[in-house]
Image 1 (tube, rainbow, N blue to C red):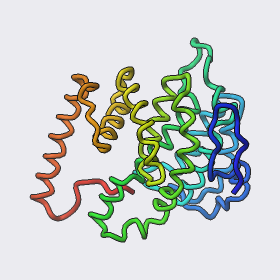
Image 2 (tube, one colour):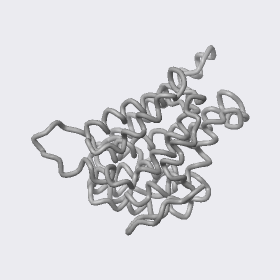
Image 3 (cartoon, one colour):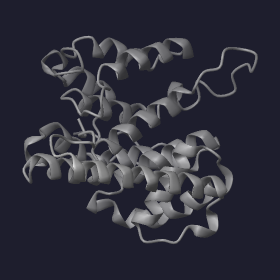
Length: 267
């Protein structure tokens, strides 16, 4: 695989092919997607680099919907994730949606949308999903779920593409990058970066009111054995207590009904 040339202020995309090499070298039509195969993906993925933000928004919707359904990692999800990671630092992605006329239609920046998709996909393949799958389907769950295993193996390469955006000037981008980096950093080779993520996590908890992002960050700090009580607010405590009640109710239902599962499988 080739590496992108280093750009000022950005990390090398270690282990990532050039996006055009990936686009041209993948047999998309042979890869399973939500409703078929991925023959339409190259056109949509190419349009993610269009100068027009509206074209990029439409392309993102078309491409990502092909590989996003019920927490499943599809065959096509892996090369799509690699492609997205490889284009994150491209000019139309990094700057194209920022500074738009505030009177225009509200639009989530392409960069944020792609980081959020990488984050969601990484959480669909995280250690908790593996544990859940093994509990329901046996210890060979991950061995037999080749698509999830392939994505998990690529986490260091995808992390190297996400990491530079932890210091982005936009708080929305920084937060999206952090929430994406957290599940990626479960990979053993990325353990050394967790200290860096802790600093960013504390910054997010000081400045963000986004419930989803706060929950992800607080869960990560707890998993890493760190005390974040000084950064919790009343909404955090209420959300944690509500989650604990729901978990207890689910456990109670599981104990009285053995005919099926009350936890959704990770696919």
